[in-house]
Length: 571
Image (cartoon, rainbow, N blue to C red; front, side, top):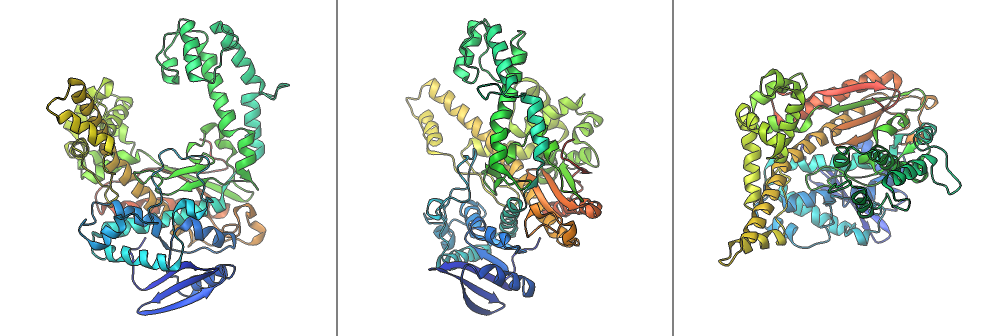
């Protein structure tokens, strides 16, 4: 990846019924007016001759039509995503006039913090609803504001805007290429799990398990799909649980529990990934979900359709490459704890992780007795657990890795005090909400009750746990974003294959080239011609090393990959 350069830009925007492009090459600026239909061919020619950085309002608005025509671009600047970063970052001086204009209400403030994406929140919502202006004048004005800021702030923000924009390209390309999906395998899994359908259309195994559970609970009309009704039914049967969570139910010794848990597991499969899901989301041998870069406040991606971020492990055998192609699959072992070690500069923690499983390293270093204890302790440290087993083990981490623990402890204190924290590259946590501020103020009043003070302490601790994790999860998301951007760039250097070996389901832009097919936080899947599988696997390794160096310099830490070449995505 490269930082922003001033040499060659191409700002794209609408001008009435046409498209206008403002080109800057060194100090010369040209204006080109095109029809929308002529845009893909013109962009393809410009990519070959100059490879500018394409600047546009929203990658999800402009890029899919280029991909549909078989045209890819190497780099872009996504003004919507960059606006959100710069508007909120504490690395941007608040007194800066350009920063104030960015923070003022404007059409660029489209919603990007999507903790729980809705199924209908798709990229093809109309532009007015998304709130992003696509006109050339608006794009040029916004570009100017952002350039003015980036010219005067910490260089880390420049890298973040480049990485975020590369992520937008990757998200569109993942949707265009799709994830190879073998429908007969998926259907066979559903048949094995659910059984054939009865006269009402209900899978027989769901019906049989439901009847079995109701009989054991003594309530033939009990609704097992309504949590309140199920909880009342359990109580009537003498099972006095506080919730219907599978973790709590698994602790109960009653003959109805095992079939109830199995009923819930397969009904979840039926509703989330059954035949209706197949019909809606899998076409031409490809699963094409909707990815939303930066959709979570920490910078992690979200998904607004298809459930890409909850791909069940039991369905992964259905992820199969085309004939003559292979999958390259990789995920990073303990990404967030490794990022914490590098972010804090804790060399002792980095040494425990070098070249091995981090949790095993903690055991070998004598910090804890078992790998399970190591996992509980590390997760407790990052998420602020202070009770139970985590409460007992986290102090051991504090003694063994004081720098790492000091970083997350300080982030927690900042959050508890109402402050904001940022990731390594400058993505910043949001301000506390008005409700939070009101609760803290009420606790400070002279006539505050003990309950007011207790509520304020509880809310402060909750916010502290959020900011504690924000710095780690957000920086891990930045590492992963750089990783996949590096993979994308390096894959482009591999040769293509002939049309007789093509994978047409991947679309015109990817049918003959190795490409990314899936990305989830710390995991990637590549769809590659089989003769190039080993080279593509090396690309993934080299990209991980490059991402580590770019973010953390020569800090002695490796990002350990679980990497394999396979004929399906099961493990």
